[in-house]
Image (tube, rainbow, N blue to C red; front, side, top):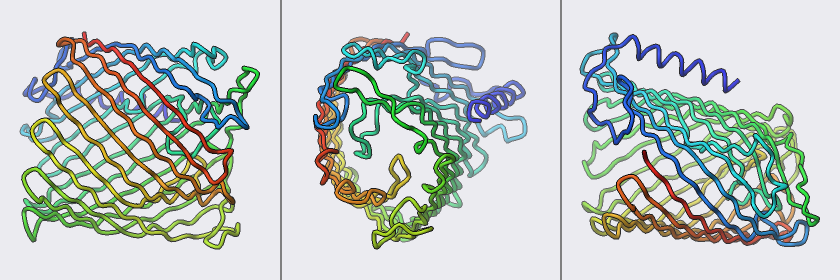
Length: 429
């Protein structure tokens, strides 16, 4: 029950705040426009308009290619409070924060896609968090939540206009600075994904609801990481490992357990350039729905793959930064099947002046979905985006973005191309 868990979590945190001694208020507090006792609020509102020429993620054969214009008015709340818990040293200033952005999406060209209350949007980065600092240890308790409509852009879905889902993630992250050169992290997350609607826009202009029983899932992930700068202050070496258990209550044949582990390193080449690398092994115990390494569906089929990443981060000057990443990763599709992806990704951020920012990105992914037999299990996804932000005043800003996305699948019925233009206007009270 994620809603109940969130309510209990919020109540406990605010009770802790009310029983604490407030101290050092304003230290590290960002811009705020409302102050209620020890709590600083930043309230904002805005409107986002988005045009896409292929809302259905379709190639025009099984489902039609249809353009769409959506309007999304939204409201944002950021609240933060710093407190000193009585049970801890007075030198430890802890932080309680809430971030939430919610609104409503209206489909203009195809109003049949509007479905009353389920069109409410909650940004996926909405979160209630409590950061505890005590000595050399930081503990961050968090409950993140989101209500989304857009299908994932990882290529796992085609021929659908909407994938409404509510996601709730409760977790605890612990960081321990063992000494000046060694650190240890232990993170746990419990995630619930509730599939509400899977909708395709038909050729007759009707919205068809597809079966969502195989999409609702629950997962638990535990991650541990140790790192040190023992050899050089410019070189960080470490080990990382994780285990994830995914369960599909209405489709237990999709359950899986994944174990991943390997080393990583980060080298500060210059004051402005760093190089990081990681690699390792991912072992999966898959459900009976998915094929094994030989392509046969077997009870509890196992697989073993490798992952790797090489990233170059460069700050060209005080205004221009860029990142290039090349690697291979293993993750899970929305149906829980294992996806192996080889990728190249580039992103740059150019602060043109104090008011204008330009962001540019390119990527290409080559993916094999081991849960889909035949040609549909392999596809190439590539695209690019460019966006610019303009600070009109201290409280008002606007942005304009363009994104191109293309999926080439060995099964032509799953291929698509999409162009999207987004304009936003945001006001901070």
